[in-house]
Length: 350
Image 1 (cartoon, rainbow, N blue to C red):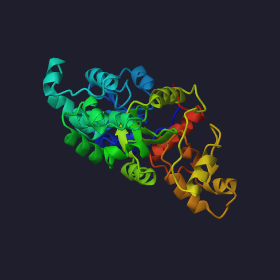
Image 2 (image 1 turned 60 degrees about the horizontal axis):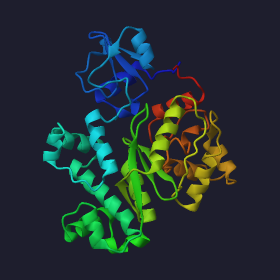
Image 3 (image 1 turned 135 degrees about the horizontal axis):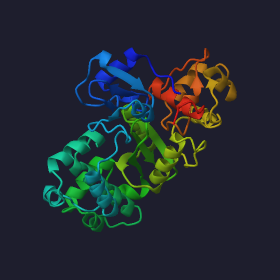
């Protein structure tokens, strides 16, 4: 059984709708008979009217039913069906220009679509579509020299509009595409919160929880290091990544086979490669990690490099702990770190 945080910590997380506690606990509301996620937007009960569970199974065993507001039986961040319809359509035809009228014809409220995309992706629905078209156009331009043809084939109504949008999103002119690259990004879902994945032509280079404090800084660092921009995409790696993460959280997978592209300094990459050598279910201290890279005096530098790891879970920085055995230094939150280690030690009850 997973050991829960203190009731004071959990109630504070519930009141603050703290997403770092997603999957760590579920709150049973005694006065209503429902159980919720920590991030539920429903009115908060009094402290004495809440009891806590580590799994949905436990909450239901005590007679609680799932909240209809936060739907605790599904992954946090899961797109509703009406969103999946348009996402699937855009994945097949990224050059489609879906306007408000087109959404209405599909029975979708345009303002609802704007709110969802703004909340979940930080951009409007129209900006999301534009990014998909730009990404498709970039791929075409890598093998074609006709900027004009690519512009209109990608759904843009004018060459100047295409060039302006391309440079704004990508950071360089369409004519320079043959020597440049982009990092395709997509959301993946886990029981402890949604993540954003990014991949280059070489492999996965980014996997972070969306609420991590260093999230934007990590993106800027990678973009600066590679001179590539993050754009929505549908790389085949994403489906396999979601499958392998699902298997990991179900405790049926101990090793990942996703190709990785480690982007950092020589020292950082050396540290991250050593992280990959820590076996499932095992932990090391930062001092042991420094010794493993044959630099026992670099404990602090190793800790900093761990903190700059931009591929969470797959590059298992969560397996490094303090010299006193305590959990320290995890960008996704210490409760997530504990959750991951408990999974690998098979301590979380299914």
